[in-house]
Length: 491
Image 1: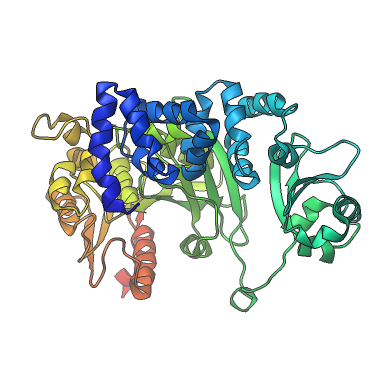
Image 2 (image 1 turned 135 degrees about the vertical axis):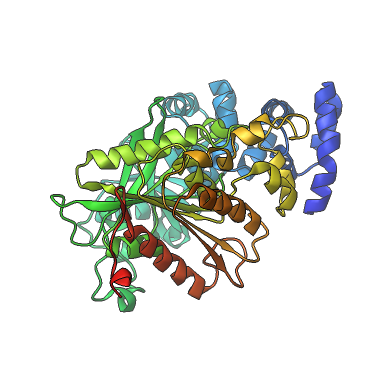
């Protein structure tokens, strides 16, 4: 169903739910494809979402399973976590193996184990085949195209098991799902990888073997910074996830400047993948920290919704906990710590420097600094209003409380502000308001206006490179003790 038709259905559905007209609601849902229901769900509050899901489940487990397949995994897992194990098992049993492979590992471990125990005696071969295997065999057929194998099985035994189970139909197996001893999915490899591998290797080695070298021409002669995954705990007990990129030839006995980058969204997430800009920063001597504070997706509904009608708030605690963890490692020069981010990251970086003076300089890029003026100038006004219980003309308290402009009087951190001239998402006026306040306060600041640039500061390659160079130039000008002498000053 086209997007505009979906939006037409939102208000009628909300009215039915508010009236408690479950019969009429069920009739309405029955006429819609699961994909359309999944799109509608994101317009509803938590209570309304739970009602819709329960109505879909009441109709049939298969109907609920169709909805689960269409939802983002964290949202689907959030619904399933509130259901009795037997109902969850009935839904999982209706899923395709690929969908089950995404949903079950994302569920709380104890719940997943209970559900799997309930399913052991069921006739659900696809899920049983995906997550367990017969003890006397190396693997088990999951579907005509999929086969599950235990990760420590030697390649030779895996091929023998495949041939025993499939004989002449071996060529039909496209995917090999590899599971650990707890029946959790740990990886996927292709039949071609298996047949070309050393027979003495185990499957876990095959999964981690390099198949291509398409970046050799780019990376030859270059050393990338070391990349480490971290978990840490905030002051209120929340556990958060992030990564550190260290300079090439890193020496733990030396002290390095720290650069914390914050993602936007706020409903987005870092995934720990290669990032060119972070490698550039690392190559220039910075330790880079990037994390997924509360509000990020990928860690369950409660984690993502922790900033609902409170943005920014507890996300700040997670960000600072990440900094504390890296500082505790002993190789960070605490006089040279820097913070930056774009869009939602610009919002949070301006919030950070209004709440702490630990950072020597900041690069606030395409920020939101004043929610009230933002709502009237952005191209997504309805999204702005969704962050608050009431519109500001009824009560401006929360709008002001969560605007970093209201804390600019606390800022001591030298701040470079960067925004595109054509930015309609976080318009230039947001940066101008913050810049004017900093200038009035006498805080060292620069406003960099990027020509021919919409949201962000790096959609054009030249602007992307300028952003990196401006950031490092600004950071290198300052320590926590103030401005330092640079080559530019000497010249």
